[in-house]
Image (cartoon, rainbow, N blue to C red):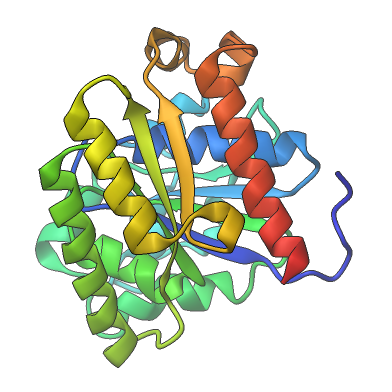
Length: 268
């Protein structure tokens, strides 16, 4: 697919305030598929666990800067976003996460800090998509990502707690709309690790389709990523699933998700 010259970068917060729902897996695999399609992609790892960074094969040395320095409230400590971006072997650039982000989540980003990332991204124009892998909490770092985002890709598993988390995320976005970023919204919803056998899973899928609208009818529900051991294997090898198992159900599904998002972008 050819990238249209002059199209505006889409800044996407991949979010849900719960761990283990597939945010990092989705960030990596969506980004890798978009890159394969010819789009220029930057992944910003906002999580102290730095799983997107590691999952894309990026290793930091002791003196390497990360998103910790980009977001730091002390101007003397701060480093521009452009200075921390690293290439990966999968055609994706990475602004790496770091364990030190835990400190910023605890102490805060300082005056104007929740808009610091948004201002930094104003100076970055080399990408078609920026995917921000958000931490599993509605704290300072997720708020900063929502303040910078054009929209949110909400990622969840088929459980009642995750559906409740989607409601809580929506409420947090309303707060951000009022104070920091009036345009941000949940544009896409994706169900991951989906096993269609339990009735509860089917019920969650039915609810999401009803609440967010079928894709073919212009809705926000992107579909499901099937449960498969190939995803876990790919994580262990620190590669996208389509590199490890290109014909697996998850690889095919993530490719379709990327194609759908790209098609919506070009139709806008």
